[in-house]
Image 1 (cartoon, rainbow, N blue to C red):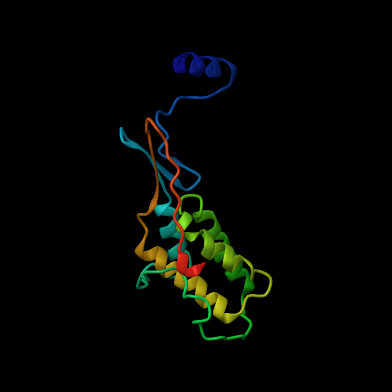
Image 2: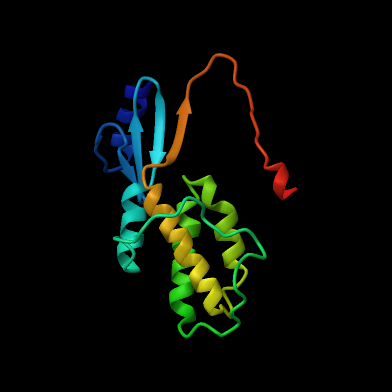
Length: 155
């Protein structure tokens, strides 16, 4: 059926078969017998390089717990840089659900970011530096189960 579909598409449109999908929109796709893995390691490295953080030390957590940061209310000079950084983080959430809360939280301050928000974004970049190889893995199972986790300390 797949070959018939490819033939029909080639007859209708100008196209060629490039084989298995490996890279698409900044996302690396690795198809194996165990399943399909998705990651954005190259994109994350480019993001770190773009913001001069490729050689930074890594952090174990993306954000400091609320209330633990020093409240610096000075306005950040270049809001465009902040917006670009947060946009990059939001794009990474496609394969990095661990970044979703951080990116969403930091996107609240796109209009008027403060210096402390920029420091928090840089901390997330440090976290990414230490977790570049993380991504999603989809495996084939006979009986799928949905498993959820929560952090009751933050409840």
